[in-house]
Image (cartoon, rainbow, N blue to C red; front, side, top):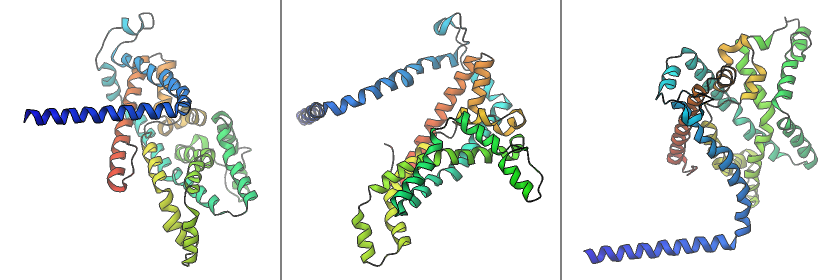
Length: 320
């Protein structure tokens, strides 16, 4: 029995040595390609991994003069403060609702845009449309948010001018809570959907054209090709993007909300990122903001892990 175990252990070691040798051989063969990874790895290490060290102030009463290690430990005091604070749950609710609306209404738009662009046969017209819909991505939220606010202005905004033309009263959209979330979602669609379509266009380009030719010979029309070739061809990409999007359910972009909201819509527009800005930078409660950031990260990891498990179970597509 012992000799059999020793033989299995020796065989396992030989397999591991062969795998390691094969990995080193592949690394040496493609060393220039792996070298291209180096700047990205360095960037992630400096800006994503090193800052994790600062998360320990979530368990301390951080004092700037004493530094991170000199500040006293307080355990879960800041988490208890958050979970007893009614404003915190309101802010979490706002963050979740805005992200859920974007998941339902904004997520499908890049897929639809990519499918429509893929059906265009006039190359010049297709390129022109692509340029127009990509352009808003390159504008900052300061500029794009200013355009949105100007369009919705009650005095000179285009939308209210149209309402006046049809005999309706102008509406102060930016100060009414019921319009804030739709404005956030629609502005996200206008700014980022065109850019997001690039990923799906890349996925569409990987579909073998012979499948379409064979379907044409078999008498399939455009709808049949869409349903049985195009959509299955990009389904894996859609699932992966959905998993990544779910992981950000507690993370709304700070710039967009900060530019668009104002005190009259705090009840529906205040989200975790703006709350962190107010508490952390304006009130200097760095430990509380670190606790919020850690809470976001833990929930985000759980969401992305559970979504990945569900996707793997039902579609056999997953991140790992």
